[in-house]
Picture: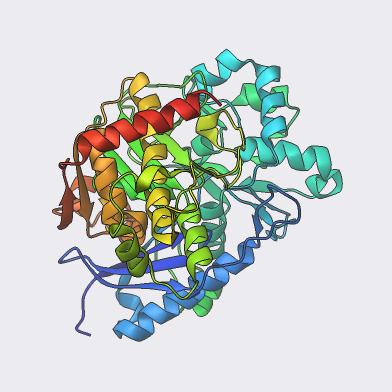
Length: 495
């Protein structure tokens, strides 16, 4: 490959690590790879637990990095910056030798709900919302308290705590650090004082020394060490200059940066993410507010996040029931033979742990109105896709109650949004357009890292003009879908 300047972005998910190589001159992705080919294991020693070994993430970062270099033929020295996107809300705790003291407690783990409630009672529910924009819920701070309550010997070994992306940055640079955005999603950031929430630390008798050094999401965060260079195939001294949680990063990758703009994703979980320019909190804790990648104290940019745990996981479950050898495109073809409404079969896709938008209830997934002489596999496939779209719309109503206007959205051309049935149903329910863009979180992280080194002057310049792959607008089924959603929603409110 000819000489040039490139950036690499890594997206550390719970199912895989994706890595993207971006040509900085053209702004185009040269190659995107994934490791492993199949999903990474999530350990669940007890019901509602979800853990992963942080070392496994790093191993796949190294494999993905070397795979990119090998497949593209670039020289490692041509990579001028590294960016990191990562699964949000996890807890990684390390000892003084920077080794994890236990497996990471990841985003979909539900064990710490009571610990979060204990924190909220100690510091005051209203104070949490006014200063943290959230209650501690089941986020990183609550997970840390759970470890202290249930694993005191391990807790005493903890030197520093961090988010999953902070651990990957540690492995790259040898430096323990986090970001304002990371501390915000961990429920450690006080938006009123623009610093770590000392009142939360003190009320829960935690040592402030547990908190790492804090910086900005887009900044010089260290350089690749000799050891990391050997393991990844990259060059020692390459700057790591961007870090953010996956949902803020996905929104940024879609050029959703300013108030009124909306992004969505439909992976293992489903997310709608809207940007506002004020500190906003949901008193009912159904949706959450975090510092966006471009947040500043003097120019607030808050991402209001709706998360539905059981979306892509619900569709994967249906695929396994139909046949693990059936492709998602084949599922789509089967479901397309069934008219909108799935002949009355209704799906409620809440089977992947406690649902924040359902007040942390864990109702499990259900199908309603099954008729043995009417419904077959195709009906179950379509009703699952429609039920996931209804769950999105149910959450969007909550966002609208907070003042967000959701009449259009942007999404990546992947996962659930590749289903025309799902995307069209959702477009009908929001009465607006859904644009699918040709980008990924790893590509966005690579481009943002080039802002951190000064190659691009702004995120807007880095994200640039993006290719719209497909647009869904309301169609002739809009009224029917809205009527079906009304029936679906009545059931939700009655339970």
